[in-house]
Length: 70
Image 1 (cartoon, rainbow, N blue to C red):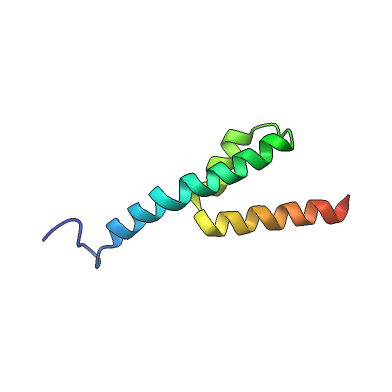
Image 2: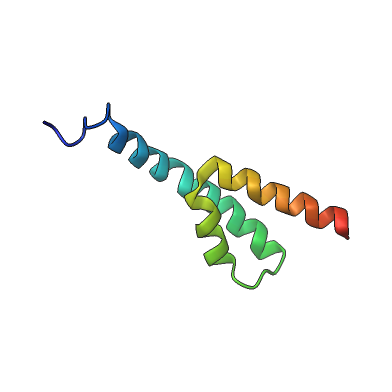
């Protein structure tokens, strides 16, 4: 059994997802946090970026909530 086709290509799909969305989302969040002078922009951007599109939505919701408070 080929390891790459295990689970109908689950490993390949997960790998591609992380290769495409993790750096893209992380970079967007990192640049936004740098503009806002955040404490730890690298760690926060890596954390949100790991979850890809879902992480981006959570980050944007967090920013909207922060704007509503101020």
